[in-house]
Length: 179
Image (tube, rainbow, N blue to C red; front, side):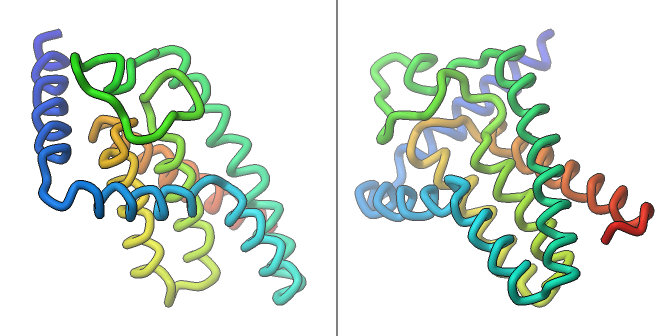
């Protein structure tokens, strides 16, 4: 288990480096704004609007999104409540996060997972948006660290979870002819 201790040590060092950045107030304000875009409401609006604009493919994508988020949230919940990793505020002495998180544990980052899942699904229909969606997803991951509610590996695993579920569900829907 020494490798877990090494990862934890690197994670804390990276987290502390992020917290020591200059212009901390501006980073926090930007992080709050970026993080809010991944609260979930935007996904619902996007898939509903896309279903209205692109009737057949939009309804198929909305259905895919419904099932993909169901799978992703289920895996996320099991991981979160099995690993039970403390958030930085509980794990680090004399550190206070900049927002109050919606739940108790930090691993994996649900905001990051949801953002990367959205990126995979939206880019499957609108590939020209991929660079912007990736930039936004990475921004969401960074915002969760800079707000002090996640360690870097929380967001890394969240990005992997969202991407893997997205590609897996996209593959399933495509091979079954549902998309």
